[in-house]
Image: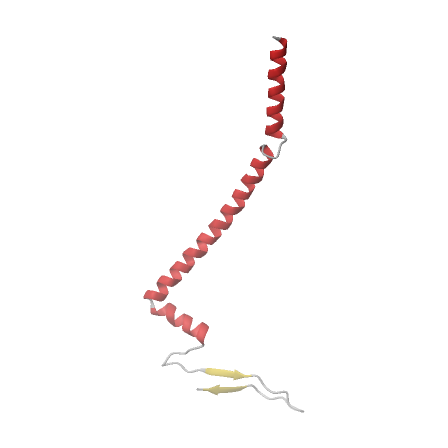
Length: 105
């Protein structure tokens, strides 16, 4: 009977070692939980970005305001009833100061 108690105690010690100190035990579980938390944050950020892009695609397909905004910002276009002003920086003068020139199209 004494050898059975000793064998059971040895089994418990080995199992406790595997749980607390081995690479497949609690330390690995903790590392995996931290990795899952980091991935969840990244997924939430990407999901929010995807929602913004989907809303922008919807606006571009249906609304003219978004299309005009993109044409203005990305292509530098202007509307038919608008006047374009370009401010030209002054050239350095040899002795005097000159005011900035304004050209209209």
